[in-house]
Length: 109
Image 1 (cartoon, one colour):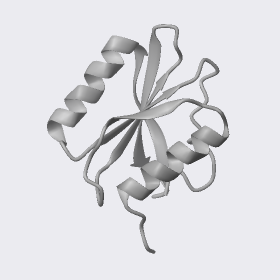
Image 2 (cartoon, helix red, strand yellow):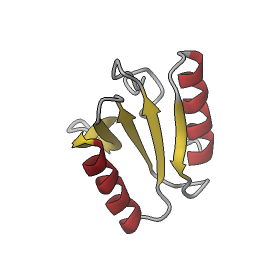
Image 3 (cartoon, one colour):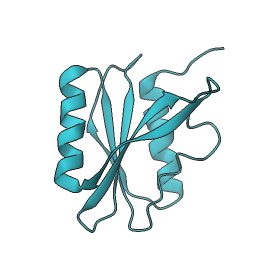
Image 4 (cartoon, helix red, strand yellow):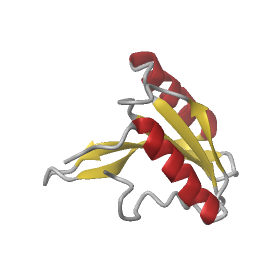
């Protein structure tokens, strides 16, 4: 199966968020072709969650929770991941309702 580039996926994800009136922006740009992506959800109340793509027990790609808690702690977790992988993208979504759209079809691929 053909995989989309990281840059293409990020642009499509940001467009989908814009259509839902959910603010989001790129915090860190990674490798345009094969960089992994982290999505930080900032609920604008001092709390945040950090998601990464992973494989489930059945081998299907999905979004899993990497960190959650105080926003500064979640930012530190993202920074540590970027320290391990400088090709990593970090997208920040700002939504008081906690929406990321990551559960929608096509976003785990």
